[in-house]
Length: 482
Ligand code: ZN
Ligand code: MN
Image 1 (tube, rainbow, N blue to C red):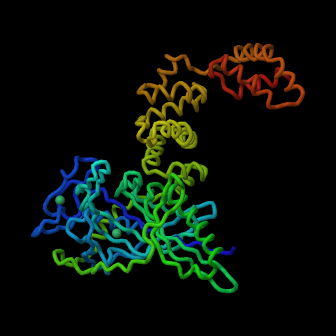
Image 2: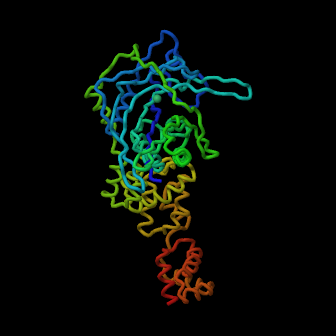
Image 3: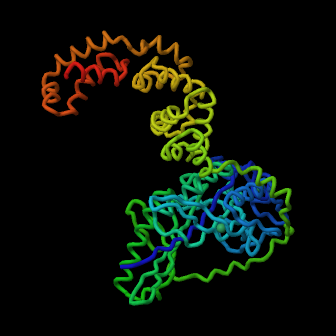
């Protein structure tokens, strides 16, 4: 069936300011309930909101990085609705004069690169959190989160597959981390996204549009991808069952159950929301002047795509290494610190992308969070490049010691007896023993099985505790076996 997938993404992103959007209460995750509150964020009568300039500057920096058009004149509006976690009975948001419009995010998938256009970016405040105690049949509200600054970023329905949705969120997260405006962690809820998805199905010269479905309860990028896959299949099945009549089905909001990997109906008929938006009377309309724009622009660092290109050109790295190094800003910074400390760039990249990344993964940390001083990794890389220690011994014995706090790589090489063995006599002697001890592998190799050499080589490397140069060992074995 010929069809086109249309996904639009709505993202709410918590800004990492010190204080809330309209009061001085701290923004902090995990504090005891209702300890980070005041009359303003509790919506007490007579309290007055004061906008957080830093939050607006952060949002402007993000808008600038995404190429949005920043409004000259902007204002806050009240979005009225009633819900227990919303103490004022309205949310201060932005309606017809958002902070920014347009712009886009470049996404890269295996299908290539494309730009997902943005519709708007605005600022609003977060709500509190309902806590349900089913055992006691009790519900309470924690208002610590109420008033936390959010930016809402709404895309055009340009995302054409679940893979692109994942790439979009990853690109947005990378951008936000480079700008240092949010932790953008979906598990902790500081990045929340609600994709809406429908299909345009070709049918006898006309296009049948399935109803737009909004998906909620997504707490990881992986679940966004899975939920969209499920939803696309479900909408196709519905079309097969109903034909063109599918277009008349109601729009709906569906939740995602990640245990069952399926979406389920939350609200079926389209609700005509009437939020009775009106201008927030306690905050005047304000303008973003040139000075403020310049201040925001100055916060935009070299962005991931540009840095990737520069790393490839300046350091002669492969696209793969350049991409792996620049996905997190802290990793890219770390690589530059290691090269500045005297490590040759290509091997330094290789150590970071393979060895350090593996240790970081195991520890569920970023490379920078391993806290290996750049000068120490640079010293290790140089010892290997100068042939003082083999790559294997350095990876297996030296690096773990340095990660545990060992401080002088050269001294450790001596202390641990890791110095590379360049004594050809000793290598040849061990190689002869290996040949004597591996009759079967020797016969296989002589019979034409090249791979059999690995077993003999492995024997030598083990005997020599990884301290010989594997290339020299291999050459010696080939010579002796010839
Ligand atoms: Zn407050
Ligand atoms: Mn919103």
